[in-house]
Length: 279
View 1 (cartoon, rainbow, N blue to C red):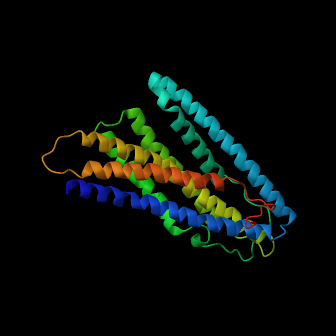
View 2 (cartoon, helix red, strand yellow; view 1 turned 120 degrees about the vertical axis):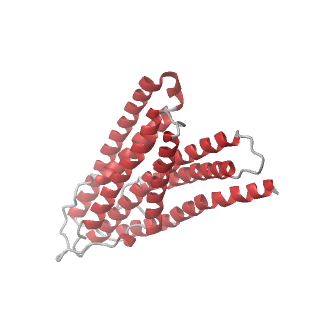
View 3 (cartoon, one colour; view 1 turned 180 degrees about the vertical axis):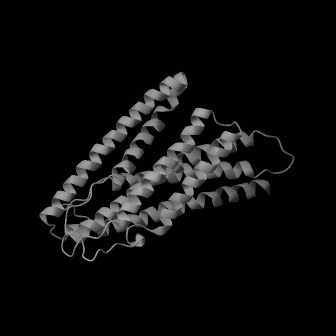
């Protein structure tokens, strides 16, 4: 009976990860609609210049993120010595994701004519509120789990600082990018309107996806490690906590990888030559 309960609990804990992947699959439809709106319009010269400038800015800052990842690898070698052989990939991923969020938080303002009087979009027009609040909840959960394990001595100080500080910093950058996309007035009437809406949609989904991946992967690893550690204990009755932690760890890792796949598709810049709905 205990094994049956453990299997049911394991499956139940995996469900949120499946739902999150499904939500991002639905978000891909929003991307297709935004791309089609840009494709079917003829942007103004200011709109074309904005698209080119935004794409160049994104590539440059993401290269900076790659450089940060390389520097993080060097720092891990200095701090952890031989143990850094297992840390080069996480360090590189942290640098790349930080570059993605930083690029969106520092995007230059468009130079086209703004709406008069100023009109601003609603958050639901850019990204599903469910995705946005799930991202925030995952960050809070990751920081809380890392802080508890750090306080209990299960994490070295160097790992604890990274597990707590990095997701918080990236989350703050993401909130800055989301706030800028929300407060900036809409473009004036014309062909620049769909371009403006597409750029805001890209920004919202990019920062949400990058922040989610940066929180889900370490959260899954921490839960998995905690569950394996608790599983070594000998108890008289059935202990479901290790099963729940291990299941949560697998769910976090699987969800993080799934969101990373969608993130890669959103990295392509908005383009007027993209046939979003072709085929």
